[in-house]
Image 1 (tube, rainbow over the protein chains, first blue to last red):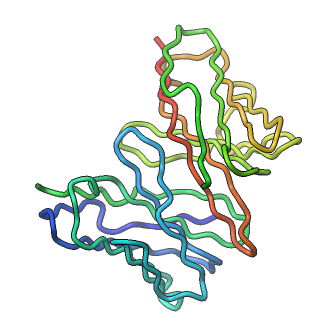
Image 2 (cartoon, chains in turn yellow, brown):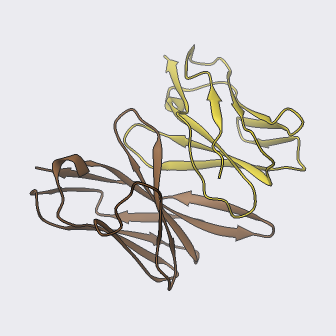
Amino acid sequence: SQQGEEDPQALSIQEGENATMNCSYKTSINNLQWYRQNSGRGLVHLILIRSNEREKHSGRLRVTLDTSKKSSSLLITASRAADTASYFCAPTFGNEKLTFGTGTRLTIIP
Amino acid sequence: GAVVSQHPSRVICKSGTSVKIECRSLDFQATTMFWYRQFPKQSLMLMATSNEGSKATYEQGVEKDKFLINHASLTLSTLTVTSAHPEDSSFYICSARVERGVTYEQYFGPGTRLTVT
């Protein structure tokens, strides 16, 4: 299995601004999933993008995938205080196990 | 849909005792579940893969005799921390995987905070 590498490690923005975080991976994938983890809680599944998709939207979330660059980005628009959390990407091929990098710690400043 | 529950959410136990944590997929069946451990300010570390009806597969460095995993049904996996010690204090998270055509989605439980005194 492979793990994604999230960048930046930490990000602080003002409420209402957009937040962008990136994920890079090393080998071929079938899909890539993004998760959010609030402090002391489990992971919440945000969105899954398949390898044949380039962009996907869900509410205020926009995920892009560039398989040629082996990278993905997660954009959160019009950020809210409740978006403060750690965000993880999980690239997978087939039924690979999900393993995780250190994530991006997002802080929304009210 | 795709809700995973864990019980208990918090547990405190004395050193030397055993603790069982349950992981349930509430609205779907999961042939495969996973157990992770997370220390403060660190990422999730995969401990083991649990397959319904068969023995769990442990990651390197994880003691199978200490962390007993049972996946008795398609909706329930249990993790038992045997002879717990303070260094086993951690946040344990389970997840369940569901097949969607040619891809798999994985959903996580809310976690169990274990404190060993």
